[in-house]
Image (cartoon, rainbow, N blue to C red):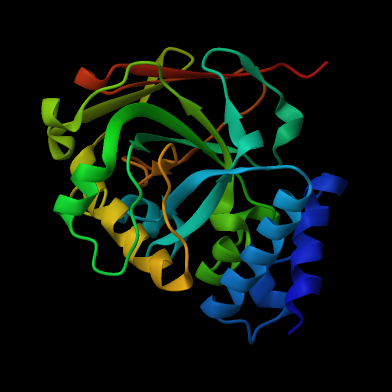
Length: 260
């Protein structure tokens, strides 16, 4: 397979506002290693075009998301500067192709974190604070018909991020016990807890640091890390308003603009 050609096809999906065929369908020999090479090729394109890497996301880290997507392991993607949207400000619907939303506890790093060999203690020391967050996942693969190879190649289905505005120190909260309610249009659509994410969101942060470290990637101070969803992902459309309430962490709201 040609990594550059597949990366170019995925990049054109947003340019053409049209999802593309699954990578595993057009290139059935593609491996997870190939998929990360495809992802990196796109990251190089985005950064050369002026975008800045602002963090990483861990995807498919909960049993609910693995079951929903039909996969059996986590993955990771990059968070670019244009993916961040302000809370309660209308998010342009044209930004996405097939958006879904999920609640997460975002880590903001105060120290660098570089694997291999990172422990939970190292991760705790590196976290400056946490924020409630809503991640907008999106797929450039038609009908979300994805394998693990497809989602990795598609930058772990990264679409957008909305961060809440109330920082909380790790010492003030047990992330495993943080409960979450997710409302759309005022209607309760899901509940979850921090323990759904690999037993604790901190475990996802450790997994990420130790996974990208051997590739020469260091998690930097100021980076945002999304460890994974506490619930299933839910489709969103123009005009929707979604609120996640995470008990002591506070709330975060994502509002999607209405198309003209």
